[in-house]
Length: 266
Image (cartoon, rainbow, N blue to C red; front, top):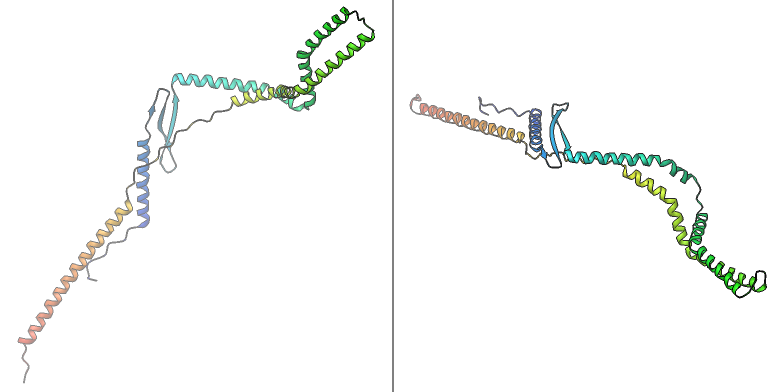
C-alpha cells in the first residue's frame, strides 16, 4: 500500500443504530401529530391533546369524546333509567330468593290450574244442567227420594264426572304451561330488570397509526462509507501510479549513465 493514504474509519454500529432509532421515533411522533385530527359532528366531537410524556420523553396523547348537548341529555336520561331498573331489580331479589328456596311441586301446581279451569268453564255449565234436570223431574212428577229420581241423579253424576275427567286429560298440557308461567314470571321479570341495567362498554376510537416512512439513516451512513472508500481507493491508485512512474524514470536514468558516461579500461 502506498504511504500517505489512510483508509476511512468504519462507522460505529452502536452510534449508527442509536441515530436510526432517534429518526424512527421522530418520524412516529410527527405521524401521530398529523393523524390526530379533531372531528366535529352534529352528535359529538372527538379531540386529541398531548397529556404529558412517557419516561423517555416521548409525547403522550389523549383522545377525548364529547357529546352534543342534545345527545348528552339523552345519555343522561338513559343512564338514569338504567339505574332505576337496576334498583328495582335489587328490590325484587328477595322475592326471587323466596321462590327459589321453596320446593316446587309441578303436579300440585297442575292440579290447581286444572281446578281453576274447571271452575271457570265446566261448573257454570253443569250447574245449569242440574237446574234443568231438577225442573224436568219435577215436571214429570218424579219426587225426591223415589227410585226414578235416584237413578236420574246417578246418571247425571256419571256424565258430569266423565266430563270433568275428559277436561282434566285435555287440559293437563295447558295447566302445566300456565303453572310454569306463573312460577317463571317473577324470574323473567327480575332477569329483564337486571339485564336492562347492565353497564354499557364505551366505544374507543382507534389509535392513529404511523405511515410516514422513516429516514433510512443506516443506508445513508453506508453510502457515505462507500464514497469514502471509493475516494480512498482512487488516492491509492493515484499514489501507486506516481510511484510507478518515478521508478521507471529512475531506472532509465541509471541505464543511460552506464552506457555513455563510463568507459571500461583496457
